[in-house]
Length: 178
Image (cartoon, rainbow, N blue to C red; front, side, top):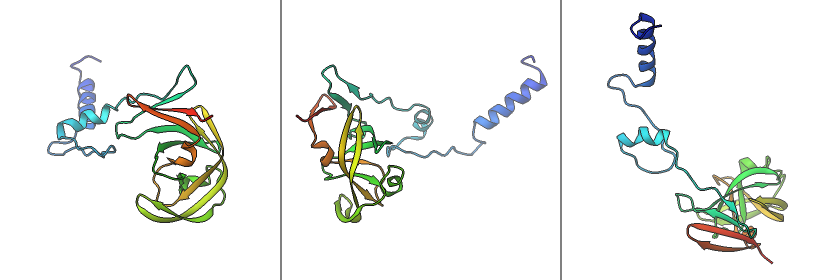
């Protein structure tokens, strides 16, 4: 097929039609990071994910977690072997998962409890004797709260108190408490 053949020109026209909006029609985007983008920035943002530094195990055994662009720290882990990504919340008393994840995480029942959350009081369940994985560390016999309105898993002080925590240069470093 040559560059001037009718088949090539038809294929080129079809590709251009499929990849570009019709004349007078704007592309629509869903913005997931909560930021405001100008029209010229949306095309770039849609194909340019932000690079985030990965957590790393240091030579002394500590685990260094970088601060994310939103200012929070996130740790890949698991609840009873079910993989989750925890947002670290030093203001949260308990490690908490959304109700929709509870059964996948092996949580069968929880004792009814009323929790004080950033969004107000919420009734939920508190499950005992769970096993958390936080990066390279395991936290046995952990309590996990289950809340309906929670969007994503939260790592609370009940688990964080089992570590010595330091902050420096945009990293939070975890070391098992003695």
